[in-house]
Length: 146
Image 1 (tube, helix red, strand yellow):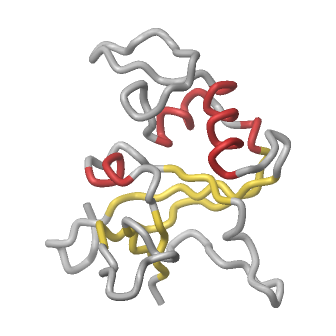
Image 2 (image 1 turned 90 degrees about the horizontal axis):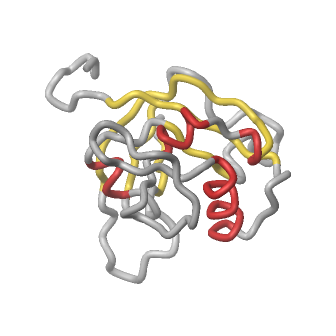
């Protein structure tokens, strides 16, 4: 079964394939205590899943395969994972920035990213979140391999 996942905050990062990691407040266990995701599961990333108005279409962006799922504190995000989350200076005002990379892209510091996520999701930096890593599947290949 392929699950749907909303990427409403990072739609264009998914479309341009710069986002390969996400953090979620849920997505760990269902109400019966069973794990929701495991490596090898497939997700369909969508613009918005819940909260659509009557008649509003479900906009599917792409399919991905889960590579890793684990729990960690929000404040444990690494510099590498901030980049893999995909948000840059053009996406949000984080207030703090790393030095630009060779392409001139500025990434937020881990502290700034954690504050942004905490405000957007109404949680605390010490909150335990689910870190989900994926790889993009090629829709033209029947095996789904890139």
